[in-house]
Length: 198
Image 1 (cartoon, one colour):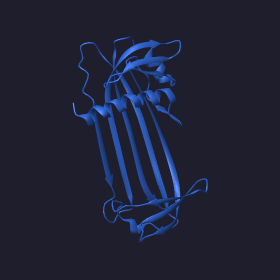
Image 2 (cartoon, one colour):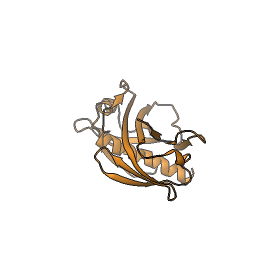
Image 3 (cartoon, rainbow, N blue to C red):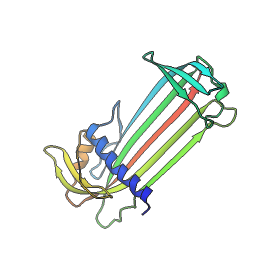
Image 4 (cartoon, rainbow, N blue to C red):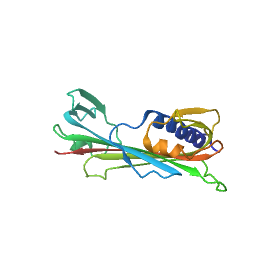
């Protein structure tokens, strides 16, 4: 296995710990829990107003909803920069999701993987860009404490990781886990940025 793929798989396993332990912020959109799988997702949208544009330096000054100003340096990859003028709104949409599924006895767990995709506005279109990433890894369950909602597992890179499960979907899922089970974790994150006129 390549080092980058192994690192991505370990990152996915560690992100499981962070997400399950801390819980997602915002209003969750959840799929109906099943005994052998669970999924949670969250979405957030933030807006800022363009206060000034330094076209020579490709520098924007944005003002957020709290009135705080933020300088943003835009590299040459920001297409259609000349269309950005004061008064426009920069919208950032962020989505993250976590899916876990029990690998059934006799099934072969898929190898760890990581993918990244990105896109940007076509020439002449309104400035916009998006990037999304997904990492998948399979972990081995070492112990489950339902009284405390704690799961100890071994990620692909070895070592032990313990997490406290706080989300209802996760608590429902761990009720069916036992030591030795393998759980496939898929972590997805996407962010899209667009410039819009309100």
